[in-house]
Length: 61
Image (tube, rainbow, N blue to C red; front, side, top):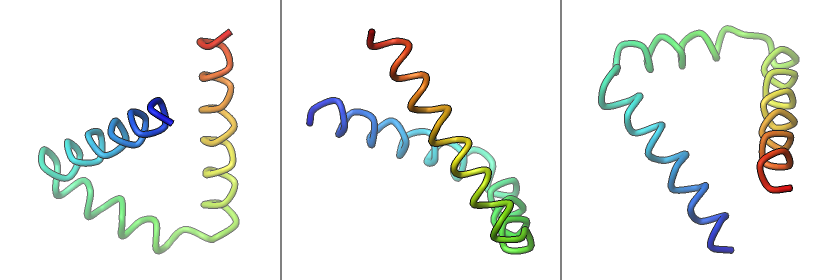
């Protein structure tokens, strides 16, 4: 559970840096996400999730 909380904290840090450091970019990305078809967003999310799992698996074994 500690690793999960650490990972969640890291996600929040990365998002916070994006919003604090590059607010214009964050707005453009959000606008672009609303204009992107759901199927493309779903595929990108699935790819990111699988990639994250592979990274965790590679570094934890």
